[in-house]
Length: 118
Image (cartoon, rainbow, N blue to C red; front, side, top):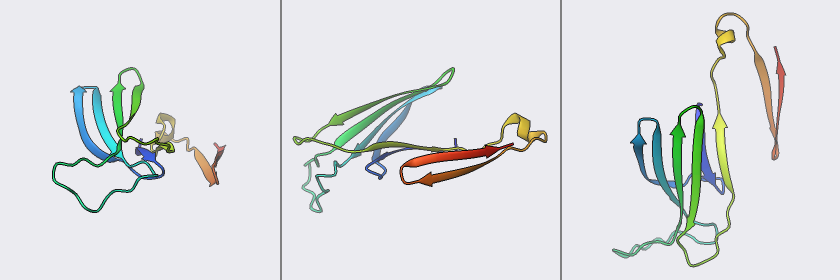
């Protein structure tokens, strides 16, 4: 994968911590501001900004497995759009030794279409 990321309302959440659990797994914590709340410009020492959290448990063993947990740390109702953006730019084993495969990708509005040819 050349791109694999999470978006909340089309923006990257702020990463707080990422740590390996074992050689093939990691745990990450991100926060984001729900769209109905804005980050305040004035920070009072020791005061926490209300935010929502995203916890990701990622494991690569016989495939990829992820558990994604959302937590609302605000006192308000939170509503948002969550997206997973991914892309790849690698060659298949058959393509390395001669056979070339090409694809044309098109994104139209919310639709994704692919027209492939060998």
